Length: 145
Image 1 (cartoon, rainbow, N blue to C red):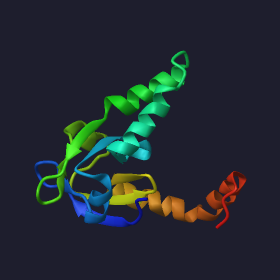
Image 2 (cartoon, rainbow, N blue to C red; image 1 turned 180 degrees about the horizontal axis):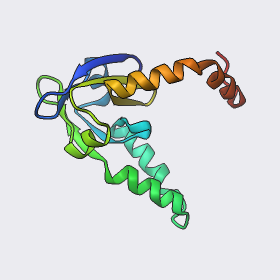
Image 3 (spheres, one colour; image 1 turned 120 degrees about the vertical axis):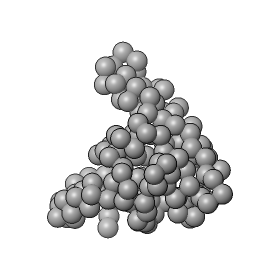
Image 4 (cartoon, one colour; image 1 turned 60 degrees about the vertical axis):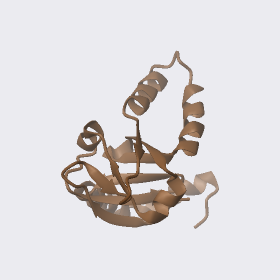
């Protein structure tokens, strides 16, 4: 499980340092794709295969299923770590997530998310204000806090 929040910078070549704790769990390479809320989702190869099977089982005749799988898979890229623990994020993914310099890398359970610092700070502030309401809605899913 991935957890925690780390602040990092993306260098001029589009490389980001992944926290060592996350690299250990991700392995020698990872899959990065467009995520929800204008962030990037990062998966281990093993977790990606599980997700891939689930998405491939969606009904092809449903327009929403086709649209989502196209969005998700077309943005995916395999990234490897260099000796300094950096991965080169493709330009199209950096552009999608508006990653320029300052970013935030967070653990989100089975995946890692990469956010622009401004987007994360805004999202966090908005979510923090409604955290109680969100938790109340999750109680319908048999989750107690």
